[in-house]
Image (tube, rainbow, N blue to C red):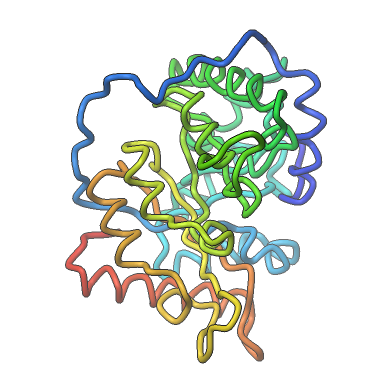
Length: 304
């Protein structure tokens, strides 16, 4: 398993699109009759390690230990550093610390191309079941987006046999109106073209930055938001706001309520991309965790 950063993963997804398996036309799943989604009673909290990538580059073992001490129970990977070719050692380290591999960010071609079994074997070893693409150039393309959805559906079928799931993580552009559409975004089209087993890893911060309503997306596609990114967001003109959960511009209580009620939430994964002056990436990641736990406590929501 090649070790690469999330930025490199974004480049690889564009290359991976050229070797995706399958083809054909997308099937619309929006009208499928689905069983009602049961509300969840408990959600676990993880940190996307891209938040502390500079610290990871210096000493990944220390970062993992410090993340556990902060109170996180899981981590989401965006590169494996010294563990890129040694999943057994990574699993041993996670077990030693009492951490869970909540998910990972990898290129689309990793789970749709010819190396899918290697991908399954690596992530099965570390106990990671959510394989998320952090972007793909085909997602917002009028034609290639249809094939991309087909490939995710086929990958979901393969991965489910291993109790694993693929998904997609949005930025702001995916939440913009799709070409030729009057109301639907590229995110809507992907959700409609993919089956229930394809995870919609909404990045709440990017959704808000795009001027969209993250809670509305969760309620529109029940059960699809099993692992989300809880990223602080600031909007233009906001005063006295900070890039820390609970001090930012996201209506967190609405997002959390929708996630528990209909989202099928298993993980809330904090991602910290902006930092307070004078505070380190690790310090800000801990502050957002404290802020999120305070909101959950206020709402009387159970979490780990």
